[in-house]
Image (tube, rainbow, N blue to C red; front, side, top):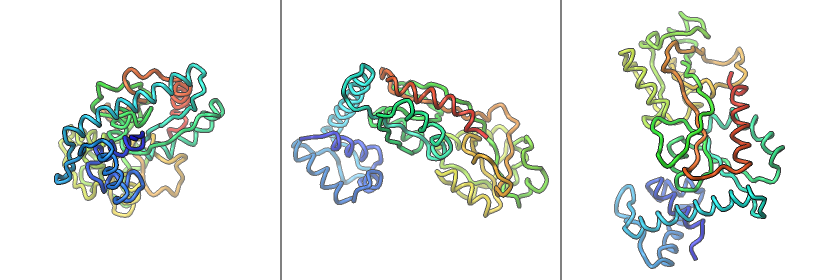
Length: 304
């Protein structure tokens, strides 16, 4: 019998592009994942993946299975949402996606109030990049996600929560920090001679950074790329480098021993919008609306 677990396994392999990456995402061994896929294929009497390609590709039967699996997961979540909203007996579950740094700063201020309002709701936090979270919401594997995006998906609804501002962080032994006091609003052109640590190319912050570089006609040296803002901060402090970060991800409060100077950018294009996204046609339940309201109310207090 094909279960939701089986559907999630197949969808994760498709999303990650390989059995190895999917097994890490699912916290199971690769042999266990391979065996699960074989069991699913045996149950269906069809091969789902072409294992000779990299990344693995779906067969025609696999594409059909993925389409139906996504629909089934979506129907299940919609049913649970509507039953919970109508006071039914179905247990209330909420899968909420969020970028790890936002989770660190925001969730301690959101979750306690949410549980005061909704003590019987079980939450599963999914921490990942916005692009991955959007795909999870579309596939029905995540109910809501806090994302920032450059290109909105037509199958998702985006509700603006906050326009964060991008700031430049500089190690205290950089030329910029030696000449300009921290907290000063600056043009990014002042950092043209510094070495940068950047987000990976697909990261929304990197897309904004590229746009700013082009606007100021600068091409700073990038010494490292990472998907993790905390990693970028630690390495910048150790390598006399600078990097860009949304102010919503800064530690609060900033203490005197923080090893980086923070510079607001004097540029109208330094906005970093944060959205709550859900599937098109997915009505928000009472507890999902509560989460949206609490995040909106707490976001400003989470900003430094």
